[in-house]
Every structure is written in structure tokens, then in C-alpha cells.
Amino acid sequence: MYRVLYRKYRPRFFADVIGQRQVTDTLKNELESGRLAHAYLFTGSRGTGKTTCSKILSKAVNCLNPHNGDPCGECEICRGIDDGTILDVVEIDAASNNGVEDIRTLREEANFTPARTKYRVYIIDEVHMLSIGAFNALLKTLEEPPGYVLFILATTEVHKIPATILSRCQRFDFHRISPEDIAQRLRFVCEQENVIIDDEAALLVAGIADGAMRDALSLLDQCMGRSEGHITEETVRLTAGLADKSHLIRITDSVRAHDSAAIIEMIDELYKNSKDMARLCEELIEHYRELMLIKTMKQPRNIIIMSESEFQNAHEQAMSIQLSDIVRAIGILQSAQEKMLRGANRRIEMEMTAVKLCSAEAAAVVGTDPAVEKRVAAIEKVLASLKNSPQRTEAKPAARQRTMLAPAKRPGADEMEKLRSNAVAFSRWPEVVEEISKYSPTVAAGFSGSKAYISGRYILVDSDKDICFECLRKAELRDKVRETVRQLTGEEYKLGRYSYPDEKKEDDPLDSFINDLKASGVNVEEN
Image 1 (tube, helix red, strand yellow):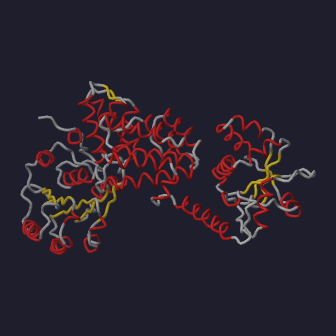
Image 2 (tube, helix red, strand yellow):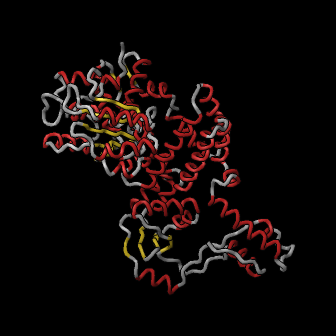
Image 3 (cartoon, one colour):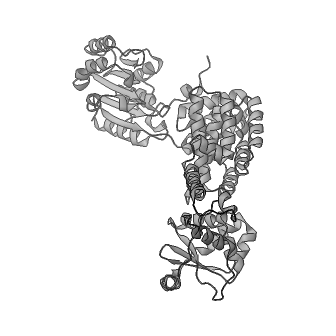
């Protein structure tokens, strides 16, 4: 009979356990030195090796020929425990044997000496499922068991176990296995099975498994059933029901272009191809998370698991999107995912989400974007003040239709002189200009030859080209420069000019309009 991969390649020795050196090394040292505890608690997420280590430990304490803390795997005890013929090692599923009577039966059996082994071992899986009464019945036996009894408790939810139980056990925490370690193990298994697996496919399986080796091997088993001896990235995507990465890139580009119709068409295409909408939503959340990490970290490559070409595409896309828009998208998608899990129609919810992502007004209506709501409230406040102003005249109809925020005041001559006297050269300004060139080579040309200085909370830009400052007056580019500076320095700075021309410029129409509003008694907020 065919044995699934996670059973066929279950580690038989501590050295074979992947990614849990903090556990296996300690257990081997205890076994070699004879400092064996009477109760162990193994905790961690699914598929990380808790049951595997429990079985290896049960063999190691009873092996006739142990070697450096490992069982030999060849003696009659090791073989008997593997094939289940030795009844002194008992596995109990606490999910289905969680009552007081089940624990009382265990206590009665524990009084009998083992028939063939040195230790009678009880492996209680999912121990957090025991009832309060069952835990209380286990307390005394767990604290002072007979010298030939060993308890191994395993759980994924250690917070549900009473403190009285925790204090009686040696606790070992199993970590999520890194994607690199999982991918390496998958390549080993494929080599043993005479199957070729691409590196990108192995990494994709490892990413889907989310730190669980058992999940990775189960998915690999499915991929082997679909493929004909060669597993590619496309094979994994088809088997797991994942959207192609290009779909995620296209959807994100459409969100940036506010093209909800294009997204809905892609959703329809994916739906017809039997793609699960909840999975698509989860993938989009993960994609936006990757963009967020690229925007906020200096070395995101160490965390993000994807091929080099995919990383380059993601990096280009991340540089074209504001960080605030990325965070906003994650919030909207997570809200949609919660509704899908609560039973909402997944396709309709995904289509609604597409509209919300492309429309700030729609997102604000459902309360998913507090920043937009705050700005809307500020605009409504100014509109109300314009409407109620007793000095309002018909000669200025634009004042009733538009809401203006006064531009930031330019520092005065004395303040400017003080800023310049304290300024020091900003050595990383060329990196800022280089980043701007990725955003727009044309705009970057206006910054060529410019310099920058740091003074207090200001970055002062010095250039002999007026186009440089014309570009900085655009809110989108100004935010781009400030965000780039923040990523390089970790600090927030305001932007200003290092020097201003002495000649008097013509009055700015916007300034005149703001002054007219103030003269009419309207309180205009400066930003």
C-alpha cells in the first residue's frame, strides 16, 4: 500500500529533524547525560515536528543500543515501536479521549511495570483538549509518576493548558521551519523519488506551507500526482489553486490606476477558472505585505520568499505606490477576508473590494480609511464656515465651491539665516536623486547638480534650476522625496529651499485667493 510522503520520510533520528536544533540538541544532551525528566511538553504550530520528536524520544529512552542520544533504529525495541507491536508506548488523542474516566484508566495502567521496555511512555497529543476534570485527575500522577513512566504532552495551543500542568513539565517550543530549510528537504525527497523539482517551485511550496513541513510534503505529494516527473512553479500554482503572480501584479496596477472595471474582469476570469475568491484575497494581502516590506526595509530580500525576477517586478511596483495606499489596501482586503470567512458571498465581496480599492470615497463610506474620513470632515467644516459666514458675497462664488488649504509659510529672513548657519551637507542626497530617477527620469533631470543640507527638521535643497523647485511644489513628488529620505535616514524632515532669489516675484493668485478668504472672516487652515 502506498505511504504518503510525510509518513514515508518521517525522521527516525534527532539529526533528521529539520529546523528544531534548540529542541533536538537539548534532548540528546539529556539522554547522553542521563538527566531525563519524567514529563515533557512539546508546543508549537502544526507540522513542526512535535509528534516526530515524541516518537524518537520514546525509542531513545528504550533503545537497546543508543548512540549519542539517538536510537539505533535497528533493535527489536525500535522496530517494535515503529510498527506498533510494543504496547508499552501508548499514543493518546486527547481530542477524543478527554474525559475524567479516560485519565483514570491511564492512571491505573501506569501502575503496571512495562512488559518489554525500560519505560512506559504516554504520548498525549493535543493535550489542551482535555477537560478541567481530566487535567485535575492527571495532576498528581504527572507530578510524581512511577520511575518507569514517562509523559510526553504535545499541543498547538499552550495557552489553554492550566499553569499547574505547565509547572510539572519541561517545556520545549517548536519554531516554524524556515522556507529555505523546507525547500531543501523537498529537494531531498524529490531526489529520492526520482522527481525533478525547480527551485522556484520548491520555494513556492515552502511559502504556502507557512513553516509546516507536513503541509509542504502533503502538497508535494499532490504535485507529484499532477506532474509527470517534473514539478514546476506552474504545477504548484495549479495544484494549490493559486492565482498566477502576474494576476496580482495586474490587479495592483489597476488599483493604482483606479480602474475597478479591469479588476472585476480579472476576478471574473479567475472565478471561471475555479479560483477560490478567499484564496485570491489572501494572496493579494500577501502581495501588498511584500510591497510594504520593500517600502519600509533596507534588506527585504531576507524575508520575502520569491524568485529574483518576481522580486524585481515587486520592487518596481512598490516604488510607484505610496506607502499609505499600500497600508490602506491591506486594511480593506483584511476586512473583506473576515466577511468571507463569516459566510458572505465571496465573489460579490471580492468585486465590492475592487471598487473600494479604486475609490477613496467608497472606502471611507464603509469606514475602512480613517485618514480619508478625517480629511472629509475637515473639508465639511470649512464648507460649513463658508456657508455661515455673514460677510459672504456673491462676487466670489468660487469661495462657496472650493475648499483651500493655505500653503506652508516660508521661513522668514531671520529664521532662514539661522537654518542656513546650522546646516550641514546631506551626503545621501545623490541616493535620493537616484531613487527619483526610477520614479521619473525626466523629473530627475531637473534635480541634476542639486545639493541638500540638513538643518534641524529641515532638508534644504540648493539648485540653480527653477524646474527643481517647480517639481517640489507638486504634492505627489514632494511626498515621494520625503518618503525616500525617511527610508534612508529613518527620520521625518520638512523640505525647503537653501536660498531664495532677492527679486520680488509676482503675486501668486493662490495666495491672493487665500488672503481674500481670510479678509472675509473665514478661518483657513494652513498645511
